[in-house]
Length: 355
Image (tube, rainbow, N blue to C red; front, side):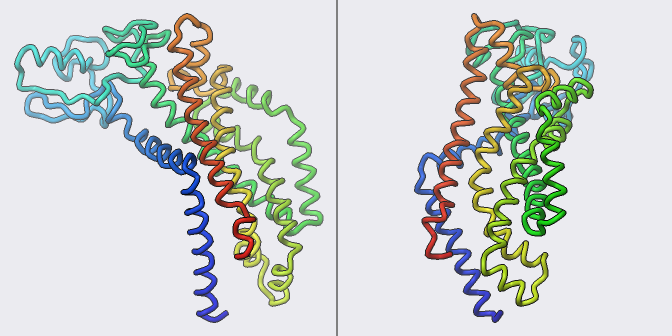
């Protein structure tokens, strides 16, 4: 292939990608949801500097401390007579009343998702107010802070799980579809046996034996959720393998690796990409469901499912029901809008002339 032909191919590929991006931007709901979700997700990684009961920076006896980053400091470090960790809100009030040269810069919202009624001033089921925007839960923890931290955990869980499932599903499914024969039959039998297991009970049994954590739940869900993507990629590879351009590549003596990665895989990714946002919706809902049943992330980890469980057990505390339901609904709605936009942008009928 000459350099001119390669450059023309690259220009056509860039043209298709650009057209797809421009098409996606015309889907206003999906485009603005994508921008908003990206901003919120990136911001969520800076929550310790924005929503925390530990100061961003403080000065004590001409020495600077960064508790939001460095972590735990006992009260004795700053001459405060409290058990356990320093109560920075109380310390700031004390220094302010005594005109001390020491000072504290608190985050925008000075409550942590982990502090409960053991901290002075926190109350169980306090209603929404200027102090606690969305009230407190059954242990006095701030609901707004927990919702924000749970947002980062939920999106991160869904993204990591989706990427792992896609890597496994594309690898195994692609190999099944391309090589076929005994290799295909062998993995089909494995998948049939594995898919016949009651996966929800498998997850619950494993979670009851091993204390679940973020990465353990990722591992459990990965080993039970790769089957769907495998079947999809197997079908796509079978379909693409039968086309003339693959036969032409084989006749030119190209290796299997080059045919798979350069020719078949790029043409098989369109349905995978369009399915990705909807997979995110499913994985977020799965985590919420496990947390609701009590087999998800261990307390006191912020979790939408755990907050929803507390809310349904205390229906009179309306903020405990509407807050987790509301933020989950808005998050899933944005992801669905993104999925609609991606599906429309990658519709092959729109670009059939370029194929």
